[in-house]
Length: 457
Image (cartoon, rainbow, N blue to C red; front, side):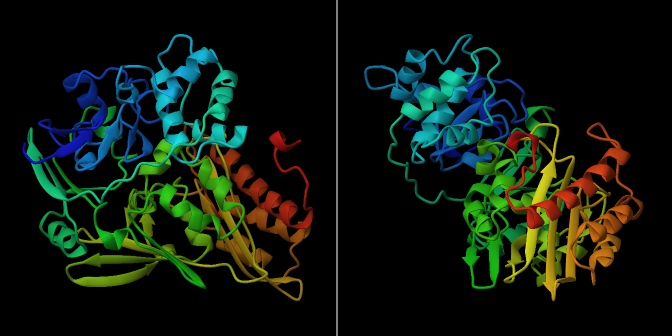
């Protein structure tokens, strides 16, 4: 393989490994930088955390092709010119923030990235930044205290990374730099795998040791990186990371920011994309309920041209979408809430943070003269696809938004949606939870200040 290059701990390097090799494997096996650990191999534990272009990511899910032209910093790269510890390392040792030490390099790298992102003002800031780092022996108190003592540091700056074409080990990795080039590649190679954040796709090379024969990386295409915050509509490029999209998304409604902070860890959100979440067509994806509730629209493109598809028409069946073999998702258009609209997005999962939804829900209502004139009740985890509960919507329309109307709507949900049962929950449990989330929406709107969760009591 030739041409794949990156900056590793301040030094430019040529990479000779196959392009779908994980960054973690290359660091440990080729570069012998074993401070970056493998714990879960699926982006859950944070032991593999490194910093790429100033942001913490999971090296176990990151493909080498993704870091072409980027700057990678590992825990070894934090040492000073005299090999003295970095202030983050020194502070963690002084506050007894480590015992066995296995998880410590990952914590150090997350704290290093946090420091360069303005630092932490509150313990909640620290918890959010470290939600993707697990410690089994020290406990979090000394680590949180360490984080709160760290001064902010200047953010790293990096030039826009270039594209390229790489091959090796029977693998091919293409990084187009324009939409036209991307669509041409897609037309010629409809069986190639599209790579954005690889937070789901990366499980193949990482956990299953299954290489990707042909990958097309969409993250260097400017048209897939747009963010337009208009007066009545928000347009997000499909390859924007969650971290890049979150400030604009959070501006749509106060419940959106806390919802998205529970979508994976900061490492996952720094890499994962909304377009990727839609492309996998998972029935438990976190973003589709929001898009369904807002009547979002997708822009799809191929060499044949562009077309727009309502999100409600995009999901055709389990893991099936309206995306043609030669098409890519270019952008997502989200109408903004109109004045007076009622809205809430919510989810239930086995773990509060960083867990796949058992049931996710987004609700939007319009009221005229105290009665519901329009309703969108969207769910994930309740059917083979993300779906609207249309019978429940009909039960609300024309009624006051009160307990009687909500109970009438709740009765229809399980029968209409026929929820799935799996390792996370039974179908009966999901039906009950979906109804309870709708009841919680009513409480949030009619009883301001009431404790809606056990943690709030």
